[in-house]
Length: 563
Figure 1 (cartoon, rainbow, N blue to C red):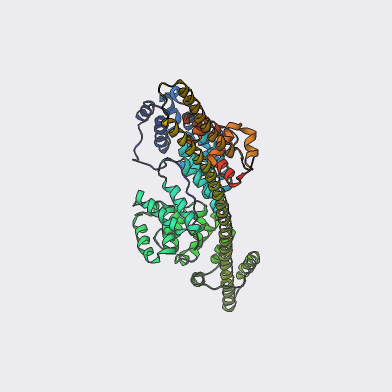
Figure 2 (figure 1 turned 90 degrees about the vertical axis):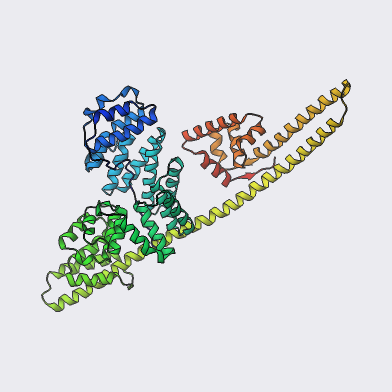
């Protein structure tokens, strides 16, 4: 099954609500009345959205805002107001000129503009810079949106590991339900053919929004059914069509599906023509070759589509279709829907041959020459189309093979690690239980003594209490000694930035001890342990490390040395 890949640009709060001109005074008053920076930021974001929809200049409302009450993050949001107007009006040149801005909210819109004009690598770098800044300001909304975008771009480039990392980062910092993020995860589970997880994702999304119009979700839902329950596919396809009354409502992610199935024949070609030259646009063109719309394309439409496309393989096909007449195009449409496989030739050679025959077409004078040319063009089209499909299949197989190998290595590593940790905890538990039993027997014996009125026995009781305390201390000492003998390659890095106390706590966390247990072992309060963990996170963050990643790396290389 061919996985569906997509990128959804998360431009926060783009939807236009009432269409009425906003009341500047009431908007500013509502923002000024907010209590606390969180509410103030939300009200400012909503207010700027309404004002930017009407392109109201900043000098009309900024003097009416209480700037003195705003913190640095809110002031940055306010400073990025012009970029909201530019992205709405398609003034991408103005945004690209701000690519070196130090304002993360301006950079967010710069990345959107770069993506919309096809500069995916630049968009990814811009979003990474901006996300690092918004994370410092603890702005989970913008940071999560940019993590989702970066993950989707990595996925489009077949960097599946990086894509998954960024999707999980987005989920970790998102405290609310994010349908786009859940649709991303569904798409990945479809790609690796883990259909049980796909089914759970679909149930989750539908439970949150039974009438979802999210393009990526609907496409991957249909893709899931095509692979697992084809008998239900028709009913879901009908449901998808019924959810969008107007062509303008259809998400760009869904347009390739509409083209492939021949839906909305009256207006679908206009919708494709209005798309930006993104991956969705090229996917729609690819579906166009095997669709019933191919014979409806005029020469002017073909030239327009060709001018916007940056895919060399698709451009070669469009050029060949452009020189064919209506009968030849009908033949080509039928050919694209067959499963004929010809010998694999060089795409470069095929393109050269196609261009040569295109030039010779102008010199053909007889119907016999035209017929021969048509046959040759048909063979070339079939070869080129099949080569493109073969390349995609090979690339998909390579990705799946890499994923399977990594999965096996990870399972072996986890099995080994679990075994070592279980053995370590078993050893600790055995001598802990033995010591505890000895203490309990000792306490019973002490209680059996009649100490009243006997000063000598009172002294014995105090001695026994000291012994009991000593045994408890020995027990804790043994457990700590076991953990001190735990080693890992990760310690070389940690010793440079952390003290012995912090490293000892990381070791105890790695073998499964909770904060309360660690506090008992170290004879301190649980709050003290939580404070140390917080300090550890700060130190690691300053060194561009995450505590969870450090613990996982520590566990993956864990070993035990006898003292």
